[in-house]
Amino acid sequence: MIHLANTLTNVSNDFVLMGFSIISIAFIATLFAVFWLSRLVLKLKRECANLTAIVDGNKNDIYGLCSAALTVNENTATTHEQLHELKQQLAHIVEKMNELQNELQQNDFLNSPYNVDIRKIRDGASVKELMRQSDLSYDEAALLIRLHGGKA
Image 1 (cartoon, rainbow, N blue to C red):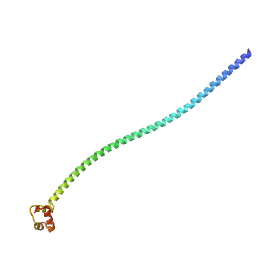
Image 2 (image 1 turned 135 degrees about the vertical axis):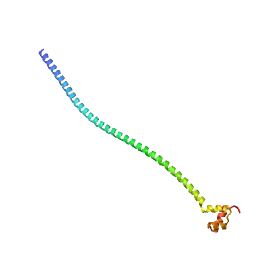
Image 3 (image 1 turned 45 degrees about the vertical axis):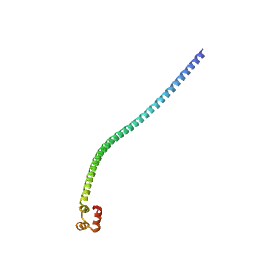
Image 4 (image 1 turned 60 degrees about the horizontal axis):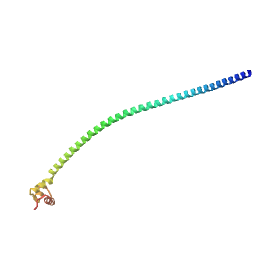
């Protein structure tokens, strides 16, 4: 019986020792896991802080780009209005120039020396009268009479 009691005590001591060993190993593994997880959490916090800084920088860049785009849009609208006004002014100037050119052409036609001679021919002037009054050569006066004179 004593032997049985010693055996039981040894077995129970072995179980206690084994239990203690298992608990110690589990405790050490848990401590290692906690240490490893805490390092991982710190690393993730640093990465999160870096990403937050990058996002903030990008946000500031986007705000700046939007502000610049609004300024460019306002400048473009102003330039467009100015170009439209210049286009209208240019069209008005071209219209005035065309009117002046037409007036000059009409004045040139009415005041051209040949126009006066043509009126004289239609009024019945002869080659000799044209040569004397308009200082034309015989060939010029004859040509004008052939072109603008009545049928002889």
